[in-house]
Image 1: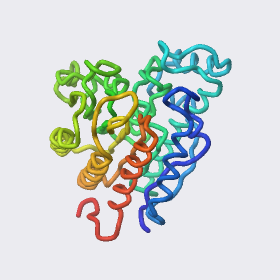
Image 2: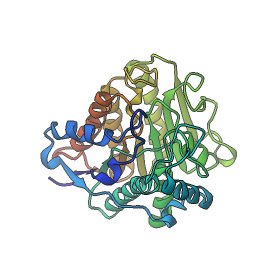
Image 3: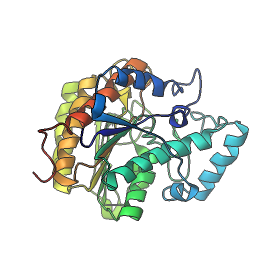
Image 4: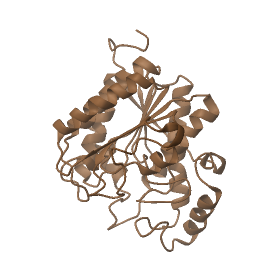
Length: 325
């Protein structure tokens, strides 16, 4: 099949996690891949192997001090990398670098014309700031990817779309004053959930004021609420005409997640992924990377991420509209 979806699989990204009883365990990768294998997508997907990001690549988004700190604490496996959510387990520097590198590998394959869509399940670590880890996130793969696409391929208008229950604060504040980083985020209202940010009035700063979209929802918001707000994202993207889309599709926004309070179903993820593929076809030659993000109910994340891959695959079937057609 032409243009199969590149789906990343391997022990390198599977080992990113913090062990029991931490919510972000290392079983999440295999739970998803077992569900995906049962979906019968055949030649519509192609498995791709992770690679490790270099320090120079990490430096595109992160400070040297942050990278050095993670490297040192990764050797000892002692303490936390933040205020208590993200343990410094042994080997976390390498695992986090593999997550970033896998997203960059996906970007390379897409930009070289080897594929148009990719999915990296253990990625979308959107809380990591330029200078620190936060909220289970050591390095911010999406932030690095945005800078990488600019540096290596000359793109400017990178769209970052986030439907994780938590606000993507690491990306938002990392590019808060950048009008070319398109940002749209549907999340649980920060008055009820970590990290407490992402109010509707946060639309960018300085030259980027009014260019970003934060769409907080109350606890219990369901698919109807999601789709009402999602229409605003589609209009925003069509007006902005992105050159590449990064889609953080955290599954902790589904009903039954143990640490969040939204009530989406997997249909929200399927609808968002399909819509983003259509927008990608209209504006950026179909180029889109999906990243798994959060999700701590294993059944939820397996089904939601599989639905995203299914939507990506459907966009590449014979008869589907191609870019520019």
